[in-house]
Amino acid sequence: MKNKKNIIMIVVIVIFICLISVIPVYRLSHTSISVEKNGLKITSSSKKNKNNYVKDKNTIILSSQEKMSANNKEKKFIEFKIAGESEVASNVIFNITGNTIYLKQGKYRDMTTNDINVTFSLQEDYYPIIYTLTKNGEEIGKGNLNSIKNIFNKNEIIDKNKEVNDVYNLSWEWVSTNSKADNYLSKALDGAVVATSENYNITESFKIELKIEEVK
Image (cartoon, rainbow, N blue to C red; front, side, top):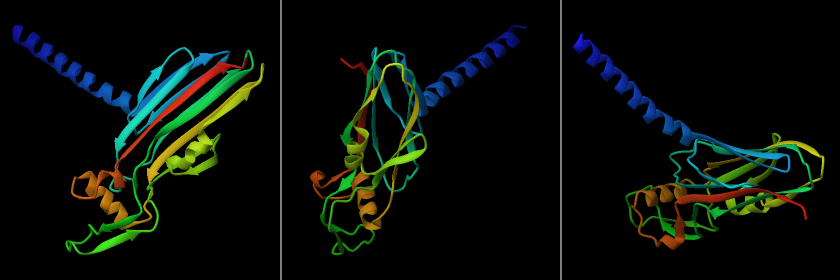
């Protein structure tokens, strides 16, 4: 009988360990958070990317930092929902800042061959990470992080007693348009290039702030 109880206890412990090891992974891969003010509610959720969330009474701050390469072209996205009936005239503020992956204009060693004398040239800076912004399913912006900032960063005034139910989706993925530049950045990620770090960046990082304020 004692052995049977011990076996049951071991099984319970194993199940508990499995559960606590799985739950954090789920939370990192699909996280949702919301804030409410003046009758409006902003909800942000994300899938397939690891984000850090901070919030106070009327603000959500989301940050993401990830090393990426052409070997992983999985699309990632964040969704924002604004819903409710504004009790007063309100200002919904969208703001995104950050740094994107790039390889600067210039001449570089061709890492697709073992011949160290073979090079390739970029006539302009190369930005492989492309963002797409939609509102209620309709595309309203597309481009690298620097260009999407001009579309994403805005103040949206919602009049008193106006009802809204809008869904924004921001996705990003590696879009290859230069295989040699892609290969070079992948090698940089592995530490196999000798160019100065000022010529390239291998980390995609951004911070998004969503805020509700009363119009004064």
